[in-house]
Image (cartoon, rainbow, N blue to C red; front, top):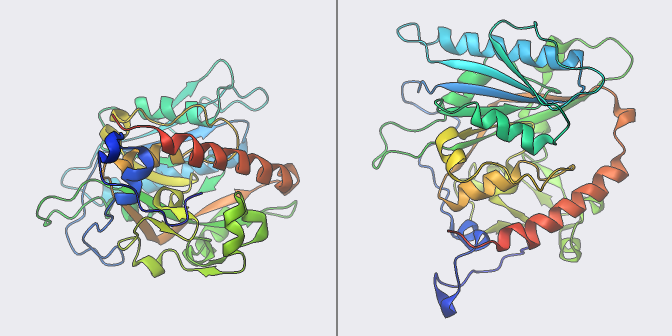
Amino acid sequence: MNTGETPPPDGAAGRARTLRSAILRHDNDYGFDPRTPSWPRPRPRVSCIVPYYDTGALAIECVSRLDAALTAYRAAHPDGPPDTQIVVVDDGSPTIPYPATTTAGTNVIRLPRNQGRTAARNIGLRASSGFDMALFVDSDVLVDAGQVISTCRLWGAPTADPPARAPIVATLMATYRAGDHGFDPGAAVALASVRADWRWSCRFQPSWIADPGDWLYVGRRFDLVTGTDYFRRWHGTVGPWLLPNMVAGGCFAVPVTAALEVGGFDESFTGYGFTETSLIARLVARGVPVVPQIERAALHVEHNPAHHCQSERDRLLALAHRRFFTELLAHDLP
């Protein structure tokens, strides 16, 4: 993992510019305060993409809440409601396929076999051609009715000179571990706080070590959002992290055209971990800023914690980490 290296100048010693060096040089000062953007609400055309695999009833709740958020977004622009859609990509679910009739207007794409979350996301991204924003929400994530509005208000400062680039929007998350007791989705979403997200404040844990150099950070506290002025002063690495690592897959938005131009997600990342980071890295390397959405937390629901083996997750995450930092970031930029 990179721990503060400074890349050589472009073209030094005849070397091509790599994905890593472009990310390290990236200037993420997007030019406004994400807590109080003061311009009229932008109205991008929004496509919500939900990759699905045997999630069941929780996914129906996820899509229903996304539909409510899109309805609120359109209602906020009565003089010209933006185009919106929801795309559910059922990734070959063998046991609980996503039902055909749940939310009116939802486009359900069914894959004949399981291809992995990155492939499902790419299919949803391609189905979003003609929209401005792709908002990716995992099928075990719930949002409140203001989520789309809060995301779109960060889409760019129309008063900026030159005009601001459409950003990547990183939504902060909370986690709810649901057991056999009654689960009230509305109450859980209402209690979700951005301050519960590890990116808001964390102490580096021994279980997070994926590289020998990471021992340096064990026990150290990181305030990754506020400590970098909401990512505006993010330069190179902060602790063991690069800027693309600040975008978590549960809920995030990207500009559709830019995402398609860089080739979408790298489908070689098929297991747990880093399934979203390849696209974010490619976009950051092209100069797309990352803006945190800190007004409303999305809620990740672990509806059956017994199905989540943490030791296996840690093992898969370490493998994905190695591939991302040693292989993907070494790729030359075109």
